[in-house]
Length: 217
Image (cartoon, rainbow, N blue to C red; front, side, top):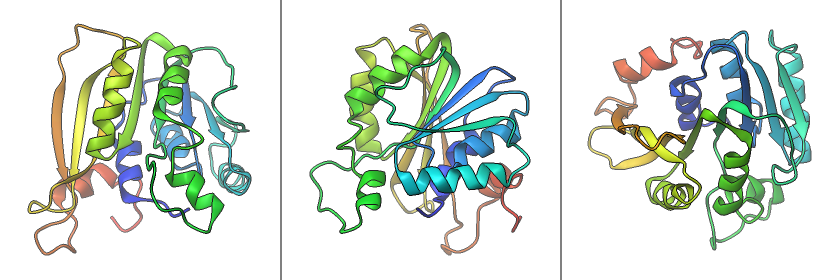
C-alpha cells in the first residue's frame, strides 16, 4: 500500500504522549508506529497487522529503522488480540462498505471494512484503552460521524478534531478525531489546508506540521 498524505497528517498531529504504551491498529507499512516512535522515543509501541504482505513490509521497515527496539510488529487480527491497556491507540482503519471490490485482495482488506467493522473496532479500542487514554483515528467525514455515534455507546467521546482540505476551495475530505472516556471534555476543532490555491504548493501550515518527517522540507 502507498503511504498516504492524510495518514502522515494523523501521525504528525496525534498526541503520542510521553513514554507509556501505544498501539497502532492496522499498521500497514508501519508508518504510524514509526512516526510515533520518532515523536515519543520512550514509548513502547505495538503495531498490529492482519495482512501477510503488509506485516512482512512493516517488519522490514521497523528493522531498518532506528526504532527497532521500540516497535513490535504483531501479525494478528485485532479482534482476538489481548494485551495490557494502552495510553494511546492510533488507527487509519478501512472504511468502505458495500462498494465495488478490487481484484487485489490486499487492496480490499486495506480499504473495505468487512473484516473490521466499526462496531468491532470500537469494542476493541474500548477494551484496550486505559481509562485516561486517548484514541486517535482518521476517516472521511461521513464515516467519522458513524464511528462517533458507535463510540458514544461505549463512553468514548471526541475531544479534538482536525478537518483536512486539499485546498481552500475544496470540501473536507478527511477528519482526524481524538476520543477519550472523559465525558466532560470540551471538543475543539482545527483545520489544515494541504495545498495553496494552485493545487501544487504545500501550505505553510502543512510544511510546518510535516517538516520533521518529509525529506523534501
